[in-house]
Amino acid sequence: MRMLYFLAWALALPFFFLYLLWRALRQPEYLRHWRERLGWAPPLEKRPRILIHAVSVGETRAADPLVKSLLARHPDHEILLSHITPTGRATGRELFGDRVGQTIRQTYLPYDFLPLVHLFLARARPSLCVIMETEIWPSLFTLCARRGIPILLVNARLSERSARGYRRVARLVRPALASLTAIAAQSAEDGERLRALGGRSIQITGNLKFDVTPPATASAIAGDLRHRFAGKFVFLAASTRDGEERLLLDAMDRFGAEVLLVLVPRHPQRFPEVGRLIQERGLPWARRGETGTPAGDIRVFLGDSMGEMAAYYAAADLAYVGGSLLPFGGQNLIEAAAAGCPALIGPHTWNFVDAAEQAVAVGCARRVQGLEGLLAAVEELGRAPDKRAAMAAAGLRFTAANRGATERVMALIEASLPEEKGRT
Image (tube, rainbow, N blue to C red):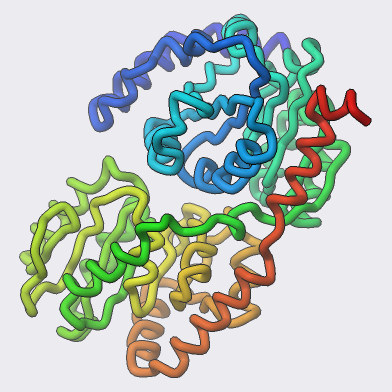
């Protein structure tokens, strides 16, 4: 199976360059730093280094409290933050600011082809590797084990849907998971699924996303947004995916004139596309990228900015958490709860099964079935400020009760750091 995996990468590698070119048509950033995808990590000093792999935006934000704790408690170590997507890389720069290029370096993780991973590890020389959530890279895991580099899978989650897919290639996945030093799973269910696939040394540490704090600027930005929203009832459609904006825009006649629909697409490359969808319908609209306060007849506001989701939630009266009306698996609803924003979610939430079920159970989120259910909930809650206030308070209690994953994950990391093990 490993030989087949190696041959598959060897045959597929040229096509990945075509894929990069295709992606670059919409996101030119895909052509930057392309040598890193072949294992050419940036020049690095010889010093203790922790590799943290955060594939894209969500994983990078989840890594935020972990990176800050590591820098505070292990200032002799450098953090090498790796990504797969340009938006993940941009999120890292946004979160860590001036520290990027100093105590934090960034790179793309190479394709999981054995020679490329070998080159990457030889150049990066990590003391320890931390993989965020559930990214399983057999070549990386194998070479780390051979080199004696501890490797941890943290904030790990595995839905039953994903587990079924991995079971089809169990002969490849099982030894990869068995080579890990430890696994920090979000929930007992995630841990059991990972154990069934060959994972060992599994601890339940909770979800790091509960420990993420909003940026210091979020409150001021939220105030500015509320000013621009001109006192309207704000229904936020957050982290929407392809097709969801169309559904909501086609239903605009169901919203009263006092309702402002705020659309914030999940992927920034889709901002122009969503702007065109609004224009095609002849709706009066404004966007975050423009200055000024919308006039009273504005019906739609396009949030075409990155890194401001906490502010959008804080400025909204009610939110729909995207990717859940259509079968995308749902986006992170913890951000809404932490901001005290009542949340509506659709039926498709397998990416955040436990968080979604808990949020519904405690009353900070409501699950709706399809577009009609969503529209009915917006109409009902729009007339019920007391219900929205109760949902908001439940969200704040929900996030407070689930904090603490960072300390539990830090204990696993510190037990695995080579110099820490040498002191015990």
